[in-house]
Image (cartoon, rainbow, N blue to C red):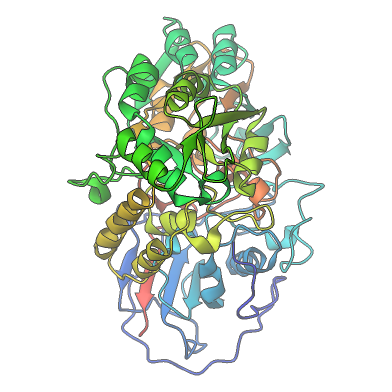
Length: 578
């Protein structure tokens, strides 16, 4: 999470001051949308031409321009336009606020300015930034903060206010309440079919299913578990599942007990994933297979490769330990040459039935191979996320969304983002490898999305070679609802198919039981309401709630690929300037 400020931007509060620059050659302008009928493509446009600019010269040291055009109805709840000042403020906040979740690419920004077309914003960078799709996924309202240089306490008393067709009436640890801003009294034809949308955090799939069956919530997005499979067989409930690339993986941290590469590899080779599939996952999923690509599922990255296919070889693991001087103690556990026992801390999110099933299978499996596992179950998602980020663990197993982008992959696996108790970063999985870092850095300089595939595959190979990661299985994404209280079915199904909670989709829901309120139960929740700090960043994609209160230019419609949101008129333009 970048906190250094490479260049000072213009003041947040609407200042027209710009950095002194010299002119760079202008290329032929491309067309910018003048209405809200944007491009139908999902990807951003990459061109060597320049979107029409202001009369100010292009910065002399600019290498790349990212241009996007806000939709005509891109409004804050008070009716003011979302615009260039908000983008400037966001850049400054994300790269200068202590504890910010801003990635390094924000440090490459040298100017943010308004373009000639209405609502057009141009962002200039001093290097090519391939991971631009991780930028501006959240925007701050300039008028809502006292200073953009440090917003660490800006939302302590009042949460972000929402955007577009909803305003945030309340957002705290217990709930988020969204109220439609459109009404028939205003003469708005796009009225919403409910009075309030209430999102509530539910600690486990079992609780979610019970509350749905009892009618206390209308929609849930549960994890896969025995409770889910059994409870959602109720004929009075609607239920759908989707293959959105979600996957469950095992991570062996490079510090603590597994700082010893011999112990790490021996443990890694002793995990029988086929047994885990047979005893844990098949009862939930039906026929399924071990996933051998890595902690990603994108077809382009995974086709015809299986770097983890030959991981299971407990005999080789035992031989490695023996040759390194390890022996068994009196209880049958491995001890090093000094006689020191090694206890492996397995961090587990409490209240998750699938985690409990994994414990029942993996602990005795590893005991039989001589490894002592100490299970530490934490009581909430907040505590689990904090412990994960602090690195206070050796082993962890958790599910991740299938969203695939080289920028997100780099942020989640680079050494520069390695998370510790002293510095929380994007990389909470414990993987840090110099060779993989070099590959990720090179992938981030590739101009064409296809060019980075070889580097991504090489990174997956390094994950297998360094024995930090064991992919387990692909998991379905699930949505369930009460057809008697919320509809239409097509709208609910669209939410499930996208894998996210989006303003546009929620606005199409209808309250069918007449109480005016739709209740949605989710499992991911932000520990605070500050979108710039790590405590507020959890669940920005998947079933998280942050993007409902804070606008961004990116979203996903299929749970895998990142595309532009309705905040902008069309896919952003990426222009190479030199």
